[in-house]
Image 1 (cartoon, rainbow, N blue to C red):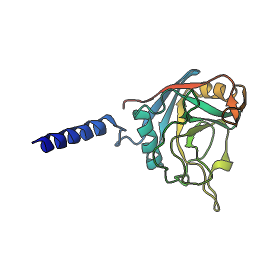
Image 2 (tube, rainbow, N blue to C red; image 1 turned 30 degrees about the horizontal axis):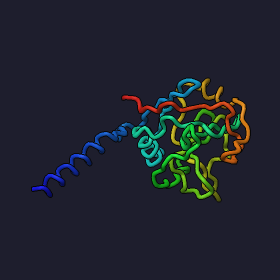
Image 3 (tube, rainbow, N blue to C red; image 1 turned 90 degrees about the horizontal axis):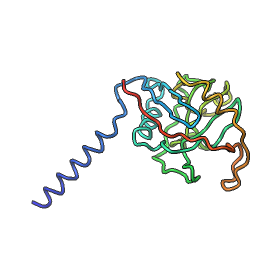
Length: 194
């Protein structure tokens, strides 16, 4: 009897956790709102071209993993990057790395959102960046992988542009350049209802 009760509790817990992670699997173009300390940005994601990347990103969103993180790398006319660090400069836990979907036909052009990664082309996990310039050099070529674009800004482009011009410097604690001198926080990322 106790084994049956334990198995039932485990099954119910699993069902509840799966129900709680609703990433709108049947929506081809889900939208996410970023509520930042500088204003709101809304992106429309493209599941038809980057299904693995969109599902990965939305899992972080729905689980609240991007809430209360900071934008830690900003280079004017290039990128605004975030999603990986808490305001205390602690790295947030990541899921498994993704297969690189950079050959999907989407370009790293102004106002798009893409996955950040290391030199390994299949190392993207949770960090993302906004292109604040036309960054064709981040697209794939015959000889190299690119950076996977998976959506674009549809509202709040002025907010993103303002973010891209904040003063930056070298962060001694992390030993990272291009770090915003005044904190820019992502208060909450929300998957919008369809």
